[in-house]
Image (cartoon, rainbow, N blue to C red; front, top):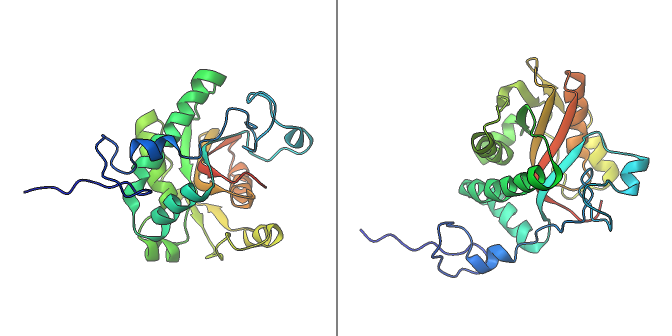
Length: 232
């Protein structure tokens, strides 16, 4: 039996390397974030990466640190849309590999302390049934195994409202859309956790998640995401 050679998701060229999703050239040309981005909000700045930006000094988001691997440009958008909306769950292996590399760099370069536990942004049960998988949960499972960090069960942290998709809404609409949308079902004993999501745009989803988790007794929250938009 002859197996078909995998082809690159971006350029459609045959792949002849251990990573079966992107050719080496497309992987090298992904929109990786530069070193000079704010460790708190994840937006570009001209200072050292270990110092948060002036906006965060004036009004910091509720989380302590944001770690991401890419900016949400066209190539990244295409891959994430394939992952979420085109029944390509296997792409979690690519995204978790890229994100774990960014986390490792933080540990080495910025003395980052890994959290006590991981938790994924949940999908509403109707959207989960339609899609068949939670894209954030798949990445979270990979990272938990790779980094040997406990993963909080997805039935402990749920989305209670089947909200409209955030992508086409204004910042004000996003904020209203996420009001009281999450619920913690069972106590969370971990005090320092990382919340896993696919894309952070205005941050309203993860702000709402943080509010719920802080109320449940979590003391420090970091955000780990595949991509970050470069404008808030």
